[in-house]
Length: 339
Image (cartoon, rainbow, N blue to C red; front, side, top):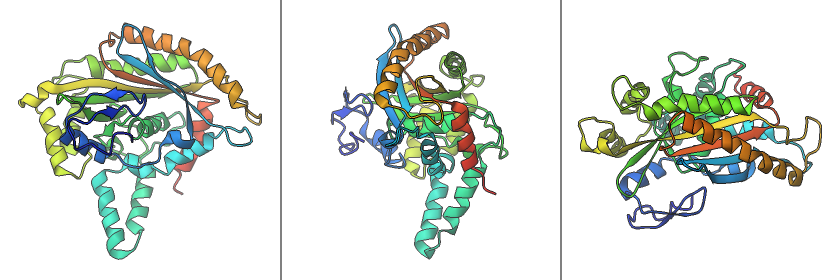
């Protein structure tokens, strides 16, 4: 990431990993620890998702729309399966707590046996639901963009908290964070929807996200359960980082007054701008079609943000048009089969 080299200097000028624009200096200690906890260095945007546009500002709101699309291979074929395989290869990073992975790595170093790594890989795959209409592929894709591309650190490993394998986790689709120069902790509640229809996906995604932003922090808030889980199961092995984060979630600590709620949302949907199965695509034809459609998608995002009354919250809204989300979902689920 562009800003990882000088993170210990509190006065360093940084670059936003998405826009490449200058950011204000940040709270070095906490932000440095958060960035150090980001796993993986390969980005899904290196080969599997191509930028159509980013940081499209929605007038009258703090929402920015970003659009990424699956890539083509050298013969003009869609690389949907390669995208799903990229996610599969990072299933441990997404679904297994850092502390558990580190124990497996220690075992490998001590015994030269990868058996514990194999075990947690199987465990991670089994945590995903086998429901055919699952949206967990979208949640995983959100994670793949939020951490290495947007520079937001996952602070709660929700998959490991499932009460039973093969079912959905009830709550937000992800909890991410960053700390700014004034010591505010920005907590990004994640939400994703993978539907065939773009309008329905956008509508339902923002409707699900809104309560996490709007509810006043209290025991009856939509976010209350996830806040408790962050306090009890913060996904870090660094005890200093856990202690620093917990101060923001302690209602009796002055740090809690510097907790800011934000949103990071992703929708995957069908789009006619791609070649049909068996057809050859040309990127020079695909990209203009997607760019032409983006203003309509952004307009609906803006409309729904206003209707949900969340225009004053910082929101990253990510659009991922595909030839067929059902095609992506089916192959993704097949990759998680352990039999």
